[in-house]
Image 1 (cartoon, helix red, strand yellow):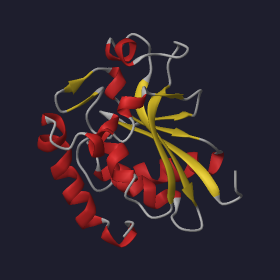
Image 2: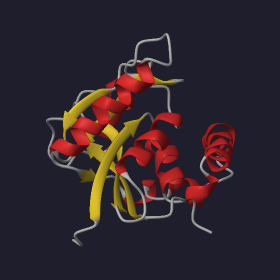
Image 3: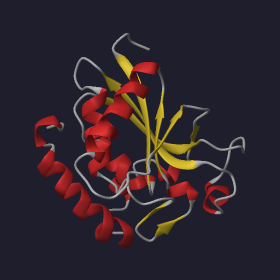
Image 4: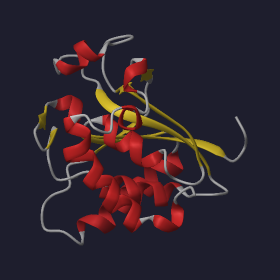
Amino acid sequence: MSKTIDTATFGGGCFWCIDAAFRRVEGVTHVSSGYTGGETDNPTYQQICTGLTGHAEVVNIEFDRSQISYERLLAMFFTLHDATQLNRQGNDIGTQYRSVVYYHNDEQHTQTMDYITKLQSQIREKIVTEVSPATTYYPAEQYHQDYYEQNPEQGYCSILIAPKLQRFEKDFKLYLKN
């Protein structure tokens, strides 16, 4: 991996939305939906959905630090989900949908904690985002990769993801690919 390429791993509910947003970001070189943080080796989507594996649905993001900072990715991530909801995002309920940042080094850990502290000072509700060291990442099944682009008319995508992406694109237009 290049000296300027780094990895970020975020979980904020269903991975389809987080995946779709970060694929639009300039400096993001690869996005993969998957699972991490649990006890089961090579889990399947069906196993994850039970909430019994301990894994979260996450997006693994490779990014070029010379083009976009980890702190900017954090800012984007925290606009894409509600960090005050414990083990859920809207109607998606269970530990697999928890708000979580898996950090890959001490610098990411410090930046994440600093960002959460700053964000917490701006809102009344308690931020419940888990911050944990990155563990083994398991890519999700192929049909989950870039799901939104493959299925924009699917109900979940058109009703829940499309409006989030419109807000995301408006808020971060300076950081998006042309």
